[in-house]
Length: 243
Image 1 (cartoon, rainbow, N blue to C red):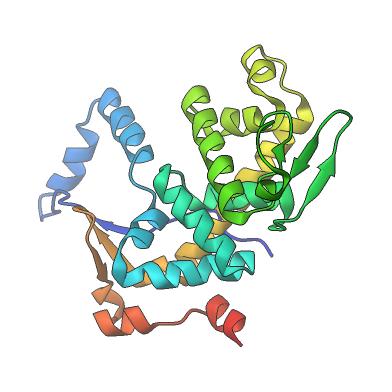
Image 2: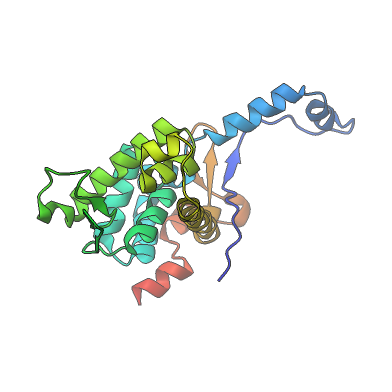
């Protein structure tokens, strides 16, 4: 199934109001190109919508339920959301990485020529030589180390593509321009999954709420939802999972 890769969570800003003279249109056309660029770059660094909903008590339960449906494990869903929140990573990116690495199998094992990859994030035995074997397969510990390493790669690389490439092929190969095509394909698959997951979240969950400019979450009154209705609403994917 193809999912539209566009996350359009409703965010309410104090935008210029249009009037009979078309002042709002004039406002936008009057901006200098540098101001447009600044606006675009600032938009990229807004708080992740999924984290916004996860951090709010009103909607946290359903966020956990949504990711439980995706991963088919509440323990894995909770671990991913907890560490994504801690390391300020998009939960959809972390979830997509885990899907690519292990298909959400916390006991996954892959033997290489001189090392072994284990667990949800396929942590390498050479990269974590002091980690006990049982800890590689522990959901909490594997997720903690995997997300911490992804955060480090992202801080070092600066972009999600380069960070994922470093996670897969190592920092040296990527930094020196030696990224193999299979690694670029790896990063592309993860980002495709991430974008699809963002779209599915928006389609089945986030569309019911408004995220205000101050970060406060309210039910989307324009769609007829009260606070109680929005909090109790069960989405198709969640209903199917609960049967």
